[in-house]
Length: 329
Image 1 (tube, rainbow, N blue to C red):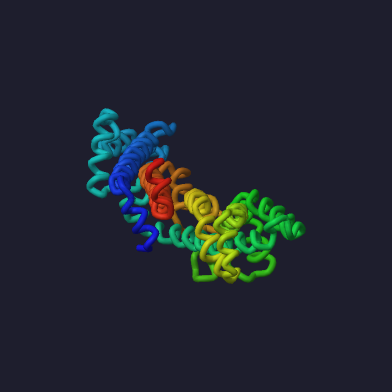
Image 2: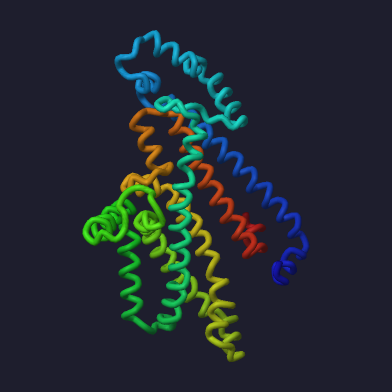
């Protein structure tokens, strides 16, 4: 713990504020999880069609369909089914796939690492590119200097951020996979198979984050404390990295958390373009097959992942600026 953070936490009343902050965030998380679980449960009842008939086929005898519905508890009242669903969730049971007969938890466990891998690498790449790029562009264009560089950076970042992930994925496949043949275009066969999916997910967020870092850094460089630091004739590298960058990261962390959530959701499209064996391709296949237990399970995983990212962003902001974040939340 740094001295600054220690001093902040010893301010009168801040310890109680930390407790209230934690309780509020925990309460919001629990309510959000309950809403997510309820929405996932209602999904199977709101989507038109009979999932049992879809799984068994149109030629299956009516007696078999009825027996299957009874075995799954689909003939019970909705409240009873909801209670059973919550009971199974607390016990760690997500149900059984209607098409493969495998436990949903096993299917998710097999496919989750592939999704986490491509989303994690894409987020790491976006952060590794956007923060240095935004900082450098802020230094080059501060005080109205470097107009051509500013125009080129802004135009390029706007265009890259506006391209949808799936369209960028198709373009990368055509150029680097089909035309040049440098990397595989489908499947998860090795390290080089990550290149195109990761780039498809990372390019847009990296462009957005770089613009935010540049704007925030420009604002920090005009602050009075930066002028004071400059008056001490400290090295520029020390000024930018030690004083300017940390103060510009608050908005970057907030937006970065939102973009990470969007990246996780974007895997649904990107995985189908690259035939990636993750949750994104699994949920699409399950929707087409009306395998609703798998759809429910994958939706829960995606939803809980987004909630976890949002919670991590809130905690990170509170650690960076405890006085404002905790007391205002």
